[in-house]
Length: 130
Image (cartoon, rainbow, N blue to C red; front, side, top):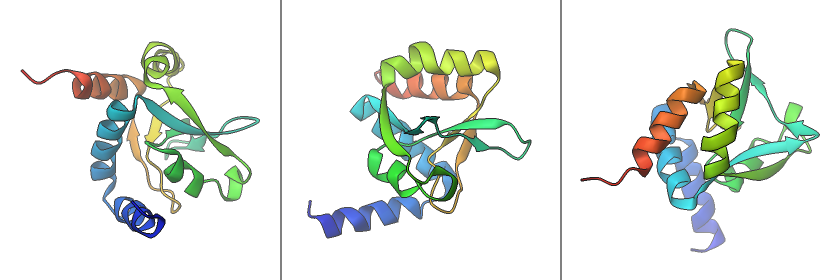
């Protein structure tokens, strides 16, 4: 795939409604075995409508990098292995009551989910179809 085609695909995915980006996120993460966050001097966080911290996650570094603007200027995409996410990160976030924001765009829209919801969705996506 050439760079122009890749950029067109990225833009097409970004134009999807949040719920469709969420489905894309689940599939891509299960296939690649990793998620991406933005790291500066610690992980980038956002705020939800209730004013709670939210950990934004993306399915690929290209999407995370597009969001490294404004408050996240200078942050870099950093991978988290799917096993690490499921075994450590999400259980810790659940314990703290911190939700995740799935697949923010440069305009800021993301799909909100609790840590438990994301764990269950990823495990269901990983499960072989009978």
